[in-house]
Length: 115
Image 1 (cartoon, one colour):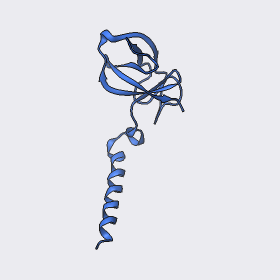
Image 2 (spheres, one colour):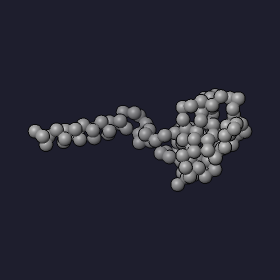
Image 3 (cartoon, one colour):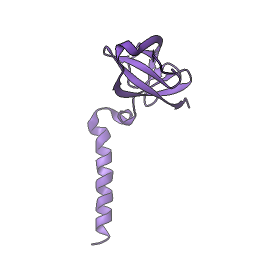
Image 4 (tube, helix red, strand yellow):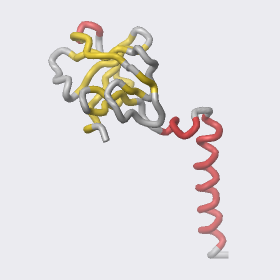
């Protein structure tokens, strides 16, 4: 009996993990964070809004939508082609940018260099 309990727990865990990708409708890319590649770096999109008065100059736009993660400048995985990104006033664009999505601006923080 003691041997069956760990095995049952392991099987439950594996079954639960495999159901997530199938039922989400997103496939395997659904588990990756929203990201955009710009200026040799990868920026992770957050749910934190940036007020419009803090938006600076336009830095670029999404050139290509990819899955699962961007690997080249201008690529993004959760934003449509043409989505614009901007500098945030008072913030170094090398550390964070703002991404416009549905008329709102969202903070995207540098995650590191592109692979």
